[in-house]
Image (cartoon, rainbow, N blue to C red; front, side, top):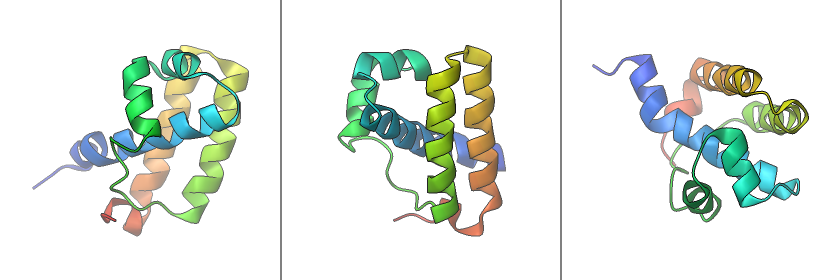
Length: 104
C-alpha cells in the first residue's frame, strides 16, 4: 500500500516542479533564477524543461489554470516559506482530484 504522501513524493511533486519550471521560464525567468526560486539545481530545471524528468501524470485543466496563478505568485513573492506553501497547495489540490495520479 502506498500512502498519499508517498505517491505525492514520487509522482506529483516532480510533476508540479516540472510544470512550475516551464511556466516560470515562459514568463521570462532564467533557468538559474527558476532553480533558485524552486530550490532546485539548474540542471534539474533543464531536465524538467526538456521533459526528461516527470511528465507522467495527467493533470486537470483546473490544476493547469491554478498553476499559472501560482507561478505569478512565486515571481511576486520570492519568499521561500510562501513558495513552499504555494507548492503544497498545488499538491493538495492535485491529490484531491481522482485523475491526478493516472499515468499518461
